[in-house]
Length: 89
Image (cartoon, rainbow, N blue to C red):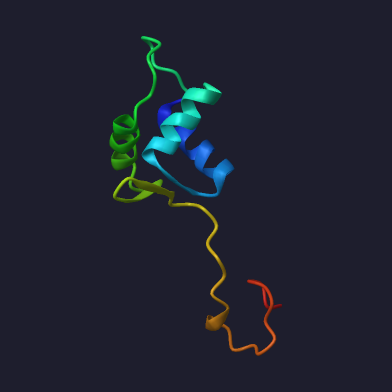
């Protein structure tokens, strides 16, 4: 598994938003992605990889958001007074 695939997987598992340090720690624990030299993944590597994939990740400082994570439904966009889901029909 590549580093960006592992980052996607951990963000999906953990709710779509984590800091680079949290992601690096999680990947070092679960071993989904390991460096060839066996050293630990560091937050700076997470920062660099997420920067290279703007279609997959949004970043705000050290916080990384999975860009394809399901978003909350903006019910205010619907004109249905009793809308309770993202699928009003």
